[in-house]
Length: 285
Image 1 (cartoon, rainbow, N blue to C red):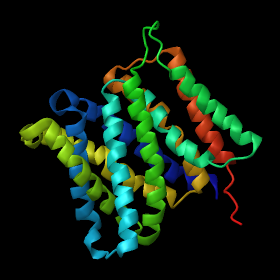
Image 2: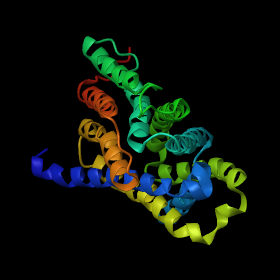
Image 3: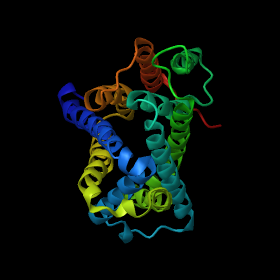
């Protein structure tokens, strides 16, 4: 594939990642009003509505086996978003994304036996160690927020596994199905947490912008980019996301990170990019 052919999908992917993290920054502005639970509920519900209108998933008729994968995909998506937004309440956006990235990274390296793969594991471990809370430092991180972000990473790994199975059967409509299931999981949590304030029309413009920027637009752009570039290139570029998140947090939320925290993010990015470049699929006997 020529370099000029890759320029468009690379640009689309960078726009998608920037959109997602800008949307997360905007979502955080809703926390004082409806908290992370209510924000997640609104984002997923509006995103599900948009995706259902655009993709019309009711035209597909999943069988029982397909529904199990779709339910797993949707539940993983809902839990991932809820835990991630809850982590943003107490830790910076860039740190949360870096910690969340350890889920897919662990999945990619699962069962590795080569020495080079253990280099990426060590780099990721170094990044996590550098982020461990230090109460003597001025920029120490909240342990609960870190645990929530790591939990979101576990859900992300599950989301990938279920998404591969569901996507093989239903393609792009999987996103609409999964987002609908995720909304059905999270909306009751948001309603219980916030109550009738969740239905305030004053929140609708910002919540709609978050739904478009964090779900509908980037998911569509990522799908186009993935079909126009090698999967390995896609994975390496996605490793930039923690850095984009940190910059979004700095620009939109004034979240300034210490030198050690930037070093930790860099280690996790390098581990993710290295794993994407060098990982070999496991051979089946």
